[in-house]
Image 1 (cartoon, helix red, strand yellow):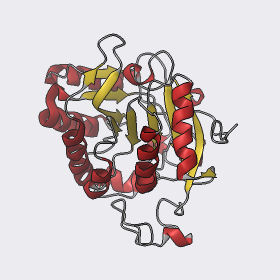
Image 2 (cartoon, rainbow, N blue to C red; image 1 turned 90 degrees about the vertical axis):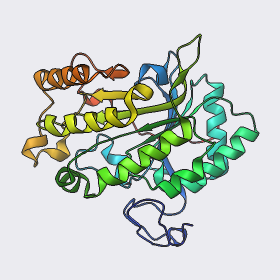
Image 3 (tube, helix red, strand yellow; image 1 turned 45 degrees about the horizontal axis):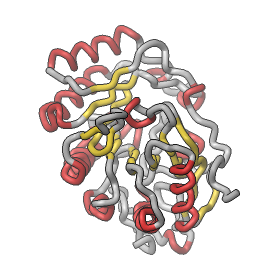
Image 4 (cartoon, rainbow, N blue to C red; image 1 turned 120 degrees about the horizontal axis):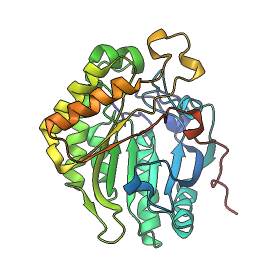
Length: 300
């Protein structure tokens, strides 16, 4: 499957097994930058103990404003095996992780599927979260059916002009629509643990508001609510942080203003959205971005 890679919509067809690099800039081996408890996800994902988050290196989108820039471009990462990845899941479970959270996993789907089967056979019992930018092929997602409990995808853009300009993916919205439909088919409406309130199955669709793009955001929310209603949860985020690598893009070199964000939230309320997470206060801070120091990757 990796010898002519078509796992994602880029369809690079490069031989990653031989070390060739496509758009994601990752060979056939698994590279990760961090595996640790993470408390900055949505409350029903993080809980009190934290989500057992594995940050994979590389990305099939590499948005110009990426908040995890260093690992997305593949400059940071430690090679691990599928066997070691299985052990990491179990170690995170032992540390009290609320779930296993796979961040930017698209280009490792075959290895992830193998590692999850292996770990579940060895006692992994907490929910599995697939945390993605949302640029996915339906055929690849079907390889994960029965292995993923919670899908946590982005819906980044409605406009093909914006997705082309910021993520070099003019077909983003059309691809994303099909991917979201497949994810929902697999996991269905959201369910929660009756005692802890933690999500056990379902989908949370994230949207990171960008400065000056409220019109595009409203189109996204309208489509998502019209399609899924209150059967899924939305996460409308104001935490966009203008990092140094966007200094040359004037429209992205500022935070989302409180007024912009308030208008978007009011729009959601008028539509009838009931199941949504919103952010309060100034959360656009680089301190919310974790350090990628290979924590948790080496077996003690």
